[in-house]
Image: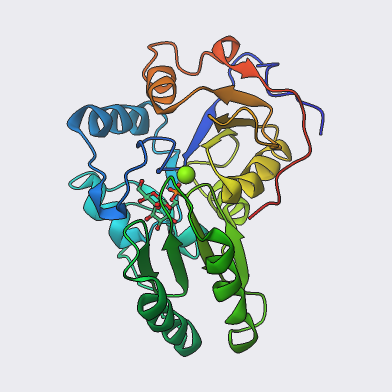
Length: 265
Ligand SMILES: O=P(O)(O)OC[C@H]1O[C@H](O[C@H]2O[C@H](CO)[C@@H](O)[C@H](O)[C@H]2O)[C@H](O)[C@@H](O)[C@@H]1O
Ligand SMILES: [Mg+2]
């Protein structure tokens, strides 16, 4: 896909989509251990105002987890990789159901792996995450265990191996589709999307924004193949770029060599 993104035209209006973990927040060995500081809340609240509400968090976290983290800030958001969509801030969060076969796997994973110090099992309705933390000991075994449940799950479920864990996702868990849903609604319509993410599931959103004349930005891991055309080094660089008074300063983005896209998760 040709990269038109760094060819801003006068009067460009932007829409901003942000991944959370590894993009806005440094990773922590426990998913519940991350904390959103007031500086980040203020940064996002200011961007939300500056963009007339065309800002959404697109995360593998559930909407409930996102709201707990960022409260009292309540932004537009796509939770569970887009399964849960809040297209306007005053919409109530509706939690998605956990399929029985996924509950069985979660209990088996807890029995087999729960004792390992680096393993955290996170049940998120139709998504199950088995976190390995930064030292993915036993990742192969965990992936095999997760794949063993696929025959018992609804068609379309897949196992995604991310940077720090394995997740079992249903077919509709695609961040790029969430971006398209937001872009088809006010106040996102007619704007150029920017997506910033760090992990395999964000690849699908990078591809989506390319088709919308947008900007794709991968955070960290320069050695990883990605469809993203631009890069920011780490969480601190993301927050500095977002906080620049002249946001979005496109020429401050590092161009990434176009590499084979990671498997869009
Ligand atoms: O799409 P994201 O917003 O990046 O969310 C991806 C997952 O993030 C969380 O798990 C990851 O971060 C945790 C905190 O740093 C870490 O403990 C865990 O090992 C990582 O996998 C969250 O818990 C998941 O539900 C999200 O899918
Ligand atoms: Mg992430």
